[in-house]
Image (tube, rainbow, N blue to C red; front, side):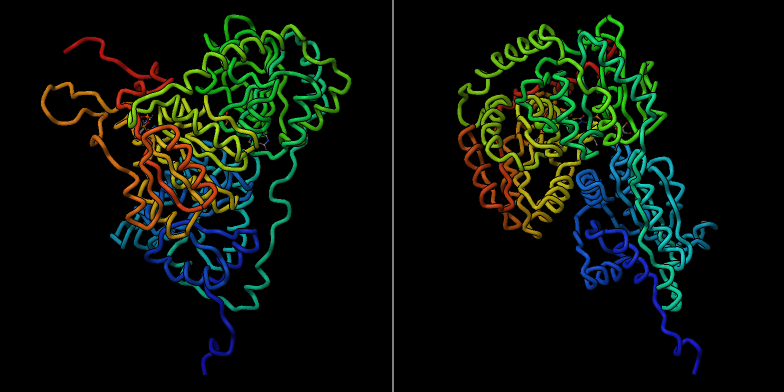
Length: 569
Ligand SMILES: Cc1ncc(Cn2c(C)c(CCOP(=O)(O)OP(=O)(O)O)sc2=O)c(N)n1
Ligand SMILES: Nc1ncnc2c1ncn2[C@@H]1O[C@H](COP(=O)(O)OP(=O)(O)O)[C@@H](O)[C@H]1O
Ligand SMILES: [Mg+2]
């Protein structure tokens, strides 16, 4: 009898499953196929939750959003080469957003790949991943799995979070090892997201600057939402009385209707403020790179809280860098600011005036009557706003151009981490993956406001939503095209324009094909009723919101980034 039959062995699937569990991973998102199908079945058999998608990019988006919402890396599992590449788009988006996720992909054997001998789905995935993720590792031997998974988790969640690629080489996946030795290697990592405490001198410098400000502003970014230091952030804002400006995914850290919220007065507070406390936000294109017209011509003093030291001075000089994790930095800053007088009443009064004026100007447009089937962004989203105000725990997913800009402006958020959108890249295609990831990790209803083009990037996942019976209500803002639906093509012949879709499309019929609830909403009242019914019923629902094809402007609020022809021919 050979020695092998006497010694109990374990295989790589066992080591992967146990290592994922030791790192607190409960859900895996992806698509089966060679060589991972049996691994998925084993994961399920061991009690792991599997969410099977229709496209790996959507599975990876779900994993990234799950990471953002929970602080634990979402895990996406794919097959090699094309499956890996599809997943990589979601991993790159997670890394750009600073969200923790792990992309696990099967890979062809090293011997063939490194000699480019044409193995099945051969690709040098490790090197293809490296430029687009926070880190990429290959596991070459079964005994390395526990350390590799722990390292991937720690890398994904520590510092600035991001995606980690783990290459599951064929040789490793087919390996076995003695069970006793394997058990000795399995472990649970200690404190993968350690506190990063700020330097007390830096805290004092920041506090002194804030105390001396005449027109201070607190700018909250999605890093502040991700940090889950909600109570301390709210207390810092309210104790100091300083106005706050939330970036889109920081909305809800304090309610959008909070008296200190300067959101509707962004174009006033950015040029007028003198000291800005940036909490988990980057001075990138979304904030005019911290200079130019967005900020007016007065010199600003920036205080920046960030866990990544090299984010400081990325665009403009930072007068008081505060490097550390947001929770630790905010706690230290609150201590240093104790007794500081509230922000200047004249400054607050000026902001309140502009916020009220902005709201008064917007209000009537939200109630405007339009003929059935010809809603616009204002009256449709005005109706949605009133419904969602009654359900603050609903997660709102949002993408598109006009569909994005108008929803961000009109629909208020009341709780942290309840708005997921196109993020730092301004990417289309996060939609259905984000809905599924959010529904899975929150267990709460999700409402998505999707441009009809944006929806198209991930729309096949309505079958996935129905299959898992997730409480997701997708609203397709059907204006008949990209930005609008009534452009004619420049050539004058009959083909559609570059931005138009088939007129009269009925997206609600898509979900009905899979057994979900489809609604064709012609008026704001019909839209509101259908959304509320979907939230209450928790049934997977798709609402085709019929908008005027002329509603919308090219590229929404970022039209200025377009390049136009300098001359006709
Ligand atoms: C992956 C990807 N592809 C293309 C784009 C370009 N793009 C595209 C294609 C948009 C769709 C706008 O049309 P929509 O129907 O989604 O929204 P509205 O009609 O409401 O503006 S917005 C935008 O920046 C993108 N941002 N991301
Ligand atoms: N826990 C944390 N502590 C400190 N900084 C963090 C933490 N998590 C994320 N960050 C930082 O927050 C910033 C988020 O910026 P960004 O994604 O541009 O936000 P927004 O788009 O809302 O402005 C990143 O620079 C990231 O390094
Ligand atoms: Mg559209």
